[in-house]
Length: 105
Image 1 (cartoon, rainbow, N blue to C red):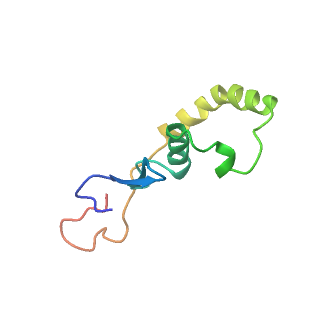
Image 2 (image 1 turned 120 degrees about the vertical axis):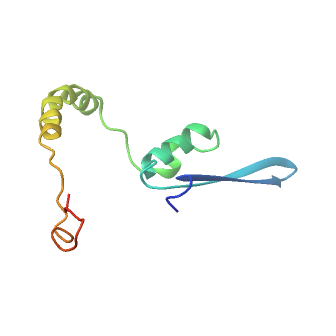
Image 3 (image 1 turned 45 degrees about the vertical axis):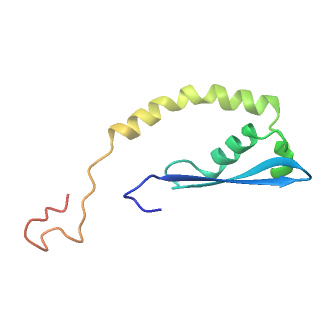
């Protein structure tokens, strides 16, 4: 997708099947806009024709795994804050001191 325009595009194609009006939505987006799982979740939430099991073969996580996952998240917050505080500015050693005007930062 070109970076000088919108990061997403939506196309709608109307059609008729057995006399009923219908349509197909084509969604194209940059990967920074949303990931594949989010797009699939959005599509499933907007569609009444398909159940999740049509696309994803597998079982739901057991109740105790879902509870453990939700309860463990608050314990990760200090680690996330520490990692965020340790972020340094990247140096570009390809251009550093190579040409006049480039600092490498």
